[in-house]
Image (cartoon, rainbow, N blue to C red):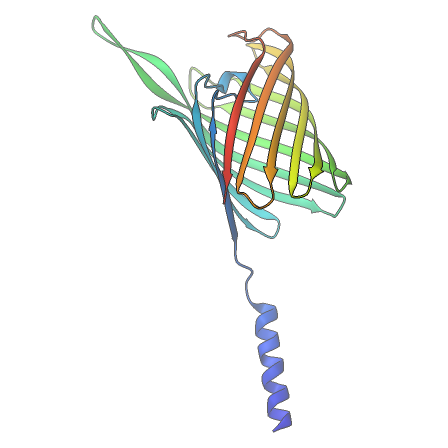
Length: 240
């Protein structure tokens, strides 16, 4: 009887060890007063709703992203595939590849009539992002992103270098303030280039799935068109 129990226990243990690890799912829904993109050409400039989904298994994750105006007008739709090629406690390297659509107004001319339509511009993306965890509350991450426009009239290559830091502050019990300052350079081949400063700030209670935040961006030097000065927004994010 003891031998049978031992064999049964070993069999259950082996099955548990070999059981596949399921994907974990999470996501967020954000309302923003002003749709701002890190790459200025993709900014929306109006109130918008953003949906970010995440399916993760070990080092691999899939991140679909959708954004549209509060009036239902589409802004962008992206699909990212991410993999942590290095995954250490204090250091990791994440590589990402993606494909997406950015929507812009375009003129449709039929005879003597001109109609404004929403046109989708396809792009392919690649990103490489190492990150150093300095402490429990500080992470530093440089990154490189490459974007290739696929349309015949938007086939420019975009290169972006960024240095960002993530800082967590705990002013009270269960309250976390997150600060993410960034400096980044954007180069559009045959179009222009720019150097920018940006920052994200948010505050959240541990027991509430809502976070109140803001994003600001300021060009330091830019030849990109359209030329925009200081921009900012306020956002409310629900996580699940």
